Length: 197
Image 1 (cartoon, rainbow, N blue to C red):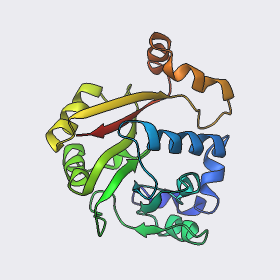
Image 2 (image 1 turned 135 degrees about the vertical axis):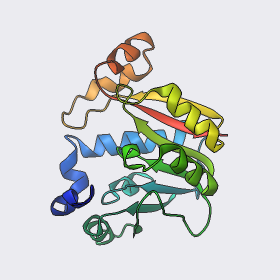
Image 3 (image 1 turned 180 degrees about the horizontal axis):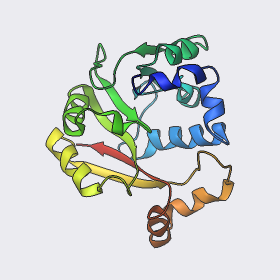
Image 4 (image 1 turned 180 degrees about the vertical axis):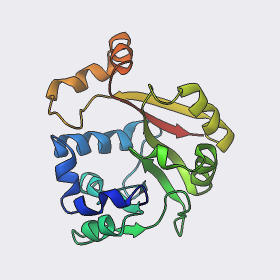
Protein backbone atom coordinates (compact mmCIF):
# COMPACT_ATOMS: atom_id res chain seq x y z
CA UNK A 1 0.00 0.00 0.00
CA UNK A 2 1.40 3.42 -0.97
CA UNK A 3 1.44 6.21 1.59
CA UNK A 4 -1.60 7.94 0.07
CA UNK A 5 -3.73 4.83 -0.44
CA UNK A 6 -4.55 4.76 3.27
CA UNK A 7 -6.63 7.91 2.73
CA UNK A 8 -8.82 6.46 -0.04
CA UNK A 9 -11.65 5.37 2.25
CA UNK A 10 -11.89 8.77 3.94
CA UNK A 11 -11.80 11.00 0.85
CA UNK A 12 -15.49 11.93 0.98
CA UNK A 13 -15.81 14.82 3.44
CA UNK A 14 -12.06 14.85 4.14
CA UNK A 15 -11.71 18.57 4.84
CA UNK A 16 -14.71 18.63 7.15
CA UNK A 17 -13.77 15.45 9.03
CA UNK A 18 -10.03 16.00 9.54
CA UNK A 19 -10.25 19.13 11.66
CA UNK A 20 -12.15 19.90 14.85
CA UNK A 21 -13.02 23.31 13.39
CA UNK A 22 -12.34 22.92 9.68
CA UNK A 23 -13.54 26.39 8.67
CA UNK A 24 -11.29 28.13 11.18
CA UNK A 25 -8.32 25.86 10.42
CA UNK A 26 -8.49 26.28 6.65
CA UNK A 27 -9.37 30.00 6.78
CA UNK A 28 -6.31 30.71 8.93
CA UNK A 29 -4.06 28.72 6.58
CA UNK A 30 -5.50 30.65 3.64
CA UNK A 31 -4.92 33.97 5.39
CA UNK A 32 -1.26 33.10 5.92
CA UNK A 33 -0.87 31.85 2.34
CA UNK A 34 -1.88 35.34 1.24
CA UNK A 35 0.12 37.35 3.76
CA UNK A 36 3.20 35.48 5.08
CA UNK A 37 6.24 36.46 3.02
CA UNK A 38 5.52 38.25 -0.27
CA UNK A 39 1.83 39.17 -0.38
CA UNK A 40 -0.33 37.54 -3.03
CA UNK A 41 -2.49 39.69 -5.29
CA UNK A 42 -5.95 39.01 -6.75
CA UNK A 43 -5.64 36.75 -9.78
CA UNK A 44 -2.43 35.07 -8.58
CA UNK A 45 -2.26 31.28 -8.84
CA UNK A 46 -1.76 29.02 -5.81
CA UNK A 47 -0.64 25.45 -6.44
CA UNK A 48 -1.56 23.24 -3.47
CA UNK A 49 0.51 20.04 -3.41
CA UNK A 50 -0.85 17.04 -1.46
CA UNK A 51 -4.13 18.95 -1.30
CA UNK A 52 -6.43 16.12 -0.20
CA UNK A 53 -9.90 17.06 -1.45
CA UNK A 54 -8.82 20.66 -2.09
CA UNK A 55 -10.85 22.14 0.77
CA UNK A 56 -8.41 25.06 0.99
CA UNK A 57 -9.72 26.32 -2.37
CA UNK A 58 -12.95 27.48 -0.72
CA UNK A 59 -10.98 29.94 1.43
CA UNK A 60 -8.91 31.58 -1.31
CA UNK A 61 -11.44 33.75 -3.19
CA UNK A 62 -9.87 35.97 -5.81
CA UNK A 63 -6.94 33.59 -6.32
CA UNK A 64 -6.69 30.88 -8.95
CA UNK A 65 -6.37 27.51 -7.22
CA UNK A 66 -4.88 24.27 -8.54
CA UNK A 67 -4.76 21.27 -6.23
CA UNK A 68 -2.59 18.20 -6.74
CA UNK A 69 -2.97 14.93 -4.86
CA UNK A 70 -1.74 11.40 -5.50
CA UNK A 71 -5.02 9.83 -4.38
CA UNK A 72 -7.57 9.30 -7.15
CA UNK A 73 -10.31 9.20 -4.51
CA UNK A 74 -9.31 12.58 -3.05
CA UNK A 75 -9.18 14.15 -6.52
CA UNK A 76 -12.60 12.70 -7.37
CA UNK A 77 -14.11 13.97 -4.09
CA UNK A 78 -12.75 17.48 -4.63
CA UNK A 79 -13.61 17.61 -8.32
CA UNK A 80 -17.21 16.64 -7.45
CA UNK A 81 -17.30 19.84 -5.38
CA UNK A 82 -16.14 21.96 -8.31
CA UNK A 83 -12.50 22.30 -7.24
CA UNK A 84 -9.70 22.29 -9.83
CA UNK A 85 -7.65 19.19 -8.92
CA UNK A 86 -5.07 17.02 -10.69
CA UNK A 87 -3.96 13.52 -9.74
CA UNK A 88 -0.17 13.39 -9.53
CA UNK A 89 2.73 12.80 -7.17
CA UNK A 90 3.99 16.03 -5.57
CA UNK A 91 7.59 15.04 -6.31
CA UNK A 92 7.00 14.94 -10.07
CA UNK A 93 4.16 17.34 -10.86
CA UNK A 94 4.92 20.45 -12.89
CA UNK A 95 2.13 22.90 -13.72
CA UNK A 96 1.59 23.84 -17.37
CA UNK A 97 2.63 27.43 -16.57
CA UNK A 98 4.42 29.11 -13.66
CA UNK A 99 2.49 29.79 -10.45
CA UNK A 100 2.95 32.63 -8.01
CA UNK A 101 2.76 30.45 -4.89
CA UNK A 102 3.11 26.77 -4.09
CA UNK A 103 1.71 25.39 -0.83
CA UNK A 104 2.46 22.04 0.74
CA UNK A 105 0.82 21.31 4.09
CA UNK A 106 1.20 18.25 6.29
CA UNK A 107 3.20 16.60 3.50
CA UNK A 108 6.85 17.73 3.37
CA UNK A 109 7.72 14.26 4.63
CA UNK A 110 6.38 12.81 1.35
CA UNK A 111 9.41 14.25 -0.43
CA UNK A 112 11.68 11.54 -1.79
CA UNK A 113 14.49 14.07 -1.40
CA UNK A 114 13.57 17.36 0.29
CA UNK A 115 16.25 19.46 -1.38
CA UNK A 116 15.42 18.05 -4.82
CA UNK A 117 11.73 18.76 -4.19
CA UNK A 118 12.51 22.38 -3.28
CA UNK A 119 14.62 22.76 -6.43
CA UNK A 120 11.77 21.35 -8.52
CA UNK A 121 9.20 23.64 -6.89
CA UNK A 122 11.47 26.67 -7.36
CA UNK A 123 11.63 25.96 -11.11
CA UNK A 124 7.93 26.83 -11.53
CA UNK A 125 7.15 29.05 -8.52
CA UNK A 126 7.55 32.79 -9.11
CA UNK A 127 6.93 34.30 -5.69
CA UNK A 128 6.90 31.91 -2.72
CA UNK A 129 6.71 28.39 -1.36
CA UNK A 130 4.55 28.00 1.76
CA UNK A 131 4.71 24.89 3.92
CA UNK A 132 4.38 23.75 7.49
CA UNK A 133 7.12 22.18 9.50
CA UNK A 134 7.17 20.22 12.73
CA UNK A 135 10.17 21.86 14.46
CA UNK A 136 10.53 18.86 16.76
CA UNK A 137 11.02 16.59 13.75
CA UNK A 138 12.99 18.79 11.32
CA UNK A 139 15.79 21.22 12.12
CA UNK A 140 14.95 24.67 10.80
CA UNK A 141 18.56 25.37 9.83
CA UNK A 142 18.73 22.14 7.78
CA UNK A 143 15.52 23.11 5.98
CA UNK A 144 16.83 26.65 5.46
CA UNK A 145 19.99 25.21 3.86
CA UNK A 146 17.90 23.09 1.47
CA UNK A 147 15.77 26.11 0.57
CA UNK A 148 18.84 28.28 -0.04
CA UNK A 149 20.38 25.61 -2.28
CA UNK A 150 17.12 25.64 -4.28
CA UNK A 151 17.27 29.41 -4.77
CA UNK A 152 14.94 30.51 -1.97
CA UNK A 153 17.06 33.08 -0.13
CA UNK A 154 14.45 34.51 2.25
CA UNK A 155 12.50 32.58 4.88
CA UNK A 156 9.61 34.07 6.85
CA UNK A 157 8.12 31.95 9.62
CA UNK A 158 5.17 32.09 11.96
CA UNK A 159 3.87 29.58 14.49
CA UNK A 160 0.56 27.99 13.53
CA UNK A 161 -1.50 27.37 16.66
CA UNK A 162 -4.86 26.20 15.30
CA UNK A 163 -5.11 22.61 16.58
CA UNK A 164 -6.19 19.98 14.12
CA UNK A 165 -8.14 17.77 16.54
CA UNK A 166 -9.50 20.28 19.09
CA UNK A 167 -11.29 23.58 18.68
CA UNK A 168 -9.37 26.08 20.84
CA UNK A 169 -10.26 29.57 19.52
CA UNK A 170 -7.91 31.76 21.58
CA UNK A 171 -4.60 30.14 20.62
CA UNK A 172 -4.02 32.19 17.46
CA UNK A 173 -3.37 35.30 19.59
CA UNK A 174 -0.30 33.50 20.93
CA UNK A 175 1.24 33.00 17.47
CA UNK A 176 3.00 36.36 17.69
CA UNK A 177 3.87 36.15 21.37
CA UNK A 178 7.62 35.74 20.84
CA UNK A 179 9.21 33.67 23.62
CA UNK A 180 5.91 32.10 24.67
CA UNK A 181 5.25 30.99 21.08
CA UNK A 182 8.74 29.47 20.88
CA UNK A 183 8.12 27.63 24.14
CA UNK A 184 4.83 26.18 22.84
CA UNK A 185 6.58 25.02 19.65
CA UNK A 186 8.93 22.89 21.74
CA UNK A 187 5.98 20.72 22.74
CA UNK A 188 3.27 21.07 20.11
CA UNK A 189 2.05 22.73 16.92
CA UNK A 190 3.82 23.60 13.69
CA UNK A 191 5.78 26.42 12.15
CA UNK A 192 4.45 27.92 8.93
CA UNK A 193 7.24 28.82 6.51
CA UNK A 194 7.18 31.11 3.47
CA UNK A 195 10.29 30.76 1.32
CA UNK A 196 11.01 33.34 -1.37
CA UNK A 197 13.94 34.93 -3.17
